[in-house]
Image (cartoon, rainbow, N blue to C red; front, side, top):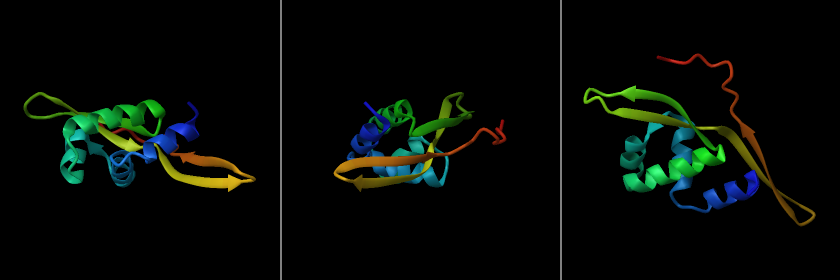
Length: 106
């Protein structure tokens, strides 16, 4: 499946859109996404896996909480997606974030 097909399929899903929207604004954990978006936690984990596999979201950090559990944080991997129709052909131009020069927090 192409990036375009994956993006259309994921954007058609009622849970993927708000997850992408919120993670485009800030880094979020699965539990934060579940609470803030009122989406079942199991659904959030499933959508995060699909979005990460497609390259539309990426894992940015892991924090170990006071109970010793790992909490992964995610961020949307693109900052713009433009949908075009030209001569009957539907296409998407995805501008992914360039994080190669970002400082990683420990």
